[in-house]
Amino acid sequence: MKFLSYSISNKISYGVLAKDHVIDLGSRIPNSSLLSIISDGSIVKIQDQALKYDPDFSVSEIQFQKPLLNEGRFICVGKNYKGHLAEANMKLPDFPSMFLRLDTSVVAHNANLISPKVSSQFDFEGELAVVIAKPGRHIKRAYAFDYIAGYSIFMDGSIRDFQFQHSLTAGKNFYSSGSFGPYFVTSDEVGDPTLLDLKTRLNGIEVQHTRTDDLIFDIPYLIEYISSYTNLLPGDVIATGTPEGVGFARNPPLWMKAGDHLEIEISKLGILSNQVIDEL
Image (cartoon, rainbow, N blue to C red; front, side, top):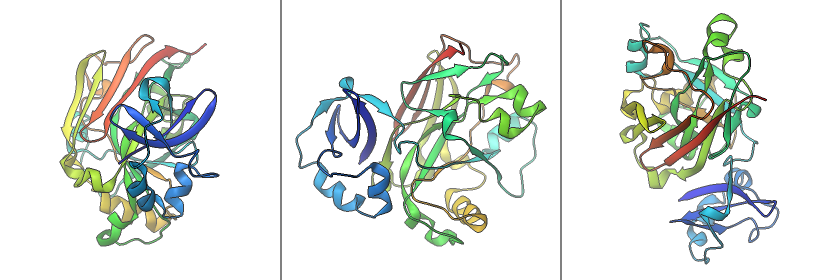
């Protein structure tokens, strides 16, 4: 099932997607949010009930919000596709390369990505995202899928000169430089996450295309590794890394600029779409 958060008539709510319509759950389950139903374990029960309701809105009437309404953490993995390391002339790592993104650096589906004043090196990275269902520490990989609520799409937008010349934290955390959404899809609907097809298109031209089985560190390994150094919490989002085709590795480099339209499509997860504008 596809869960989303959205706004309509200045009211923020959440619900499920039924073809091209939205079934509102926020008004039917008072004092709840998408994160709260994940956290208290009621999402499975709600999933069974949701499609019994009549649709409330057309998708064209709503404004998408980030699925978890700013309440989770973005835990990101770098250098995690074999093809991406090959294009960057890097050797395979022994351990995952990890970093965090601030919520202010990430926007929703259909929202504007902002190309910053201080750099022209705005790069795209299409990624599979994992949404955590319940708290855990020292999770064994054999039980990792028990901790997953579902999957979504992440765009790990990067300001490359700041990333390479200043710091990874700076390059990955510019305001409104990444995106997440449009919704998240529950694990039962996705099935095996290694069998998904990921494509990134810039202005309609395909710039990235891979299967998610090219990951160096698979999802169970990442959950085991991350939970070895921190508690995973409901609503945490793990962005699993990007494949080959990124802008900085091209000759000449391909940077995003104002007026560009970016789409990331992952089979079973939909299309995350954003327009690029200049910083004012």
